[in-house]
Amino acid sequence: GTYKGQWASGWKHGLGVQKYPSGYVYEGEFRKNAATGEGKLAYKGNTWEGTFCNGVLDGACRITLANGVAFEGTVSNGLRCGEGILTIHGISGKYLFDNDVDMGGGG
Image (cartoon, rainbow, N blue to C red; front, top):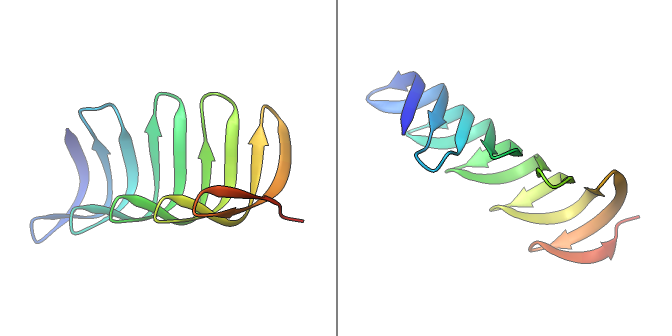
């Protein structure tokens, strides 16, 4: 992969763009070589935007998949949690999630 961006003491640190051999592209904040802070990960028409912690989405986010599914809400360690808005082919609704499991309508 390739990295273009800020460095500090030999680490990817600050704003940058990391292109991975798998085709994933992360653009955003890095801390000590890890995608940590606000950023966007993209792969084959899918995007994951929000707060990352050590390369994993963690916090407020928006996930948009190439197949028309979108989620806006909160994730914990990459898993949907709490209330979020799930959109499937243009139809949206509030849902509650616990450990990425749909717990039903969120009000």
